[in-house]
Length: 187
Image (cartoon, rainbow, N blue to C red; front, side, top):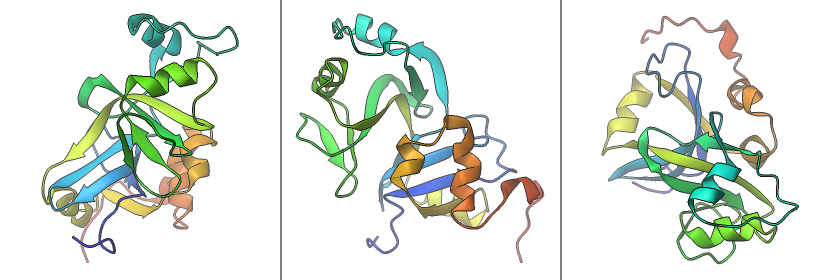
C-alpha cells in the first residue's frame, strides 16, 4: 500500500446505514493503515469515566489546577482496557506512533503524568480502546458504502464539540448525512 492509497491521517465517517453499534454515527481518526490492516481512535464518543478515576487507578497525583472532571473517550471496541492519547504537538514520549508532522498517538504513562501536571501536549484526546481492521477489511467496508473518508482536520479532533463531529466531518466532503437514506445501493 502506498502513501497515496493509505487512509492514515484521514477520518472515517460512518454512513447512516452502518448498523454496527460500536460505530453507529461515529467518526474515527485513522492512525495507521497498511496492507496489514488499519487502526484508529473514535473521536466522537465519550465514556462516563473521568480523568479523576483514570489518574487514581494509575496512582498519578494531578496538580490542583488540572480538570479531573474531563471525560475519557471510547476509542473503539478493541483492547478497551488500554489507554491511548491522541495529541498535538508530537513531543518526545516513551511510546508514540507519529501519524503526521503534528499529531501522534501515545500509549506510555509519561504523557498522562505530564498532562496531569499541566506539562503535556497543548491539545489531546484520551481514549480507552481502539478501532481495528484486519488486512483488506477496511477496503471491503469502504466498497460496501459503510464509510465516507476524508483528510483529517485538527480542529475536528480537538476543538469541535463531540456531538458536532459526525456532521462536521461529512460537511468537509460537502455531504449532509441527515439527507442520506439509510438504504444504500451500488451503481
